[in-house]
Image (cartoon, rainbow, N blue to C red; front, side, top):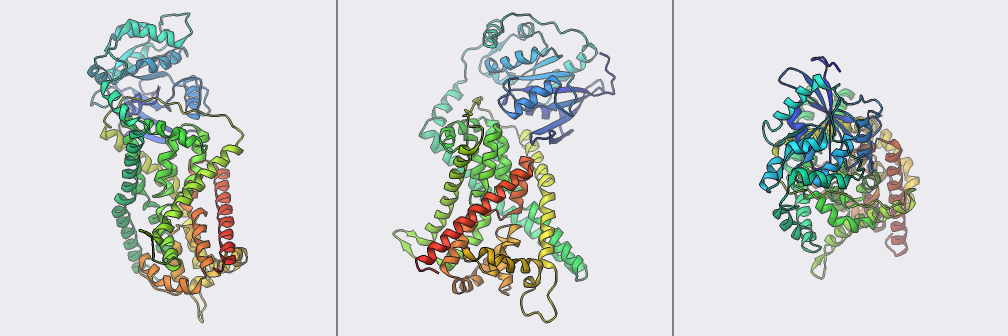
Length: 620
């Protein structure tokens, strides 16, 4: 095959998860890479460019990690089809670059043998040779080349120039891709037998696992100490996402607030000024404000994944989560949803099984996110006495009960979905427990940049569009000159709120609550400031609004209404950003619609039962 120097050669980077494939991709392509999705699915498609010393261009395609060409997940099916050149809209690769972990050859060589049988030009990158040397593993590279029948190049993806020899080997291969690749033929079809033969001929391994791995696993995989360690790790992640992001989120809110003030001061008063300040600037601020939580969350997830701990956490929790129709990998996304469902849903990308990932996405909104706290604070302060129940505060117990209700509801819902789904087969959690290693800062930085841009580009458009729509409903038509009520009462949203009263009467919601639910779709906490506006209050922030609203709500609403609204916010999908993220992560309006309908239905039924029972008990 003659390949022109100015025509990029397509190189498919393929290998098992935890082989260092992503680190090698970053080493080869640097910043010359782009991230998208494969056609029709939400699996990430990463492609980068590499320029060899000769000036030749290579297009490096980072395929999803796979253990076999007999796919057990969507990721593996995409990798299989791309390697064979059968994936729609994707050109067949010219060269397969198989990355294998030098410290775990017994597992990774099996996949290399499968790839070799595709008959395509192929190079094996023997990665992590430095870690193998530290463990006393001796690899005879020429013997390994003879056994596999393809070139084998040692690499250390986390070191500068650690892939230089690989680039030179790829560059030298280009003029000879037409030449048949000589392979050591074997009639043996049992891959495990063939791998044992290759290891016997080319590898001297003192122990199957490193001593440090064995020592750590004795504690971290212990049924008691391991779970206790996991609880501590998850607590730290939760605190970091919830607390560390607050100063940055406050700064972003202050920045966009300042931008809104400047725009308002420059523009003449009117619809255009309102659109720019209350619609566009406020909408953008509502998108960007989530970014610190997402970056902090993914920093931890990437670090745990790169260190080798995340698969162990999934292993510890798999049996517990499986009883509710989820998997061990669902735990971290659900835990992070207590801070915000948006990064929690995005974190489901670590779940390989599509069925378990979808179930986790659909129940993540039931976790009690921080946006609910202003509403809870208002209603608990108004209706729950500040008294002691033993040594515990009664208001604190109610708040704890709301969190528990969300968790139990998520488990029940996932269990119901497990019973109703067509595929009732059990999908056991199959994962590799890789060696522990220290995450490389460059890989963490690249991963964070990719996820941050994905969030801003994919979710931002939908959130911004719907925020502008909400601004329109709240702003038009304006109040007449002789208006006696707040302007919101005359808007389309106000008219809709009055119309909604008939629907929400069985829940005890008055027209003020119904109006507050509409802008609350932008973000749950907006319901508090909306109620303040409706009751003609002027409050500088949510805390002040809570203090001012508490006596009015306490005197004007019944206990049944207050409890009903509390229960409503446990379930209702009162957050456009969450729904937008479900749409983007599932690539399906149907799944977003299902989540919206079932959450609203659960909220309506639970709130109605709460209201009617409380009224029957004399709380109406």
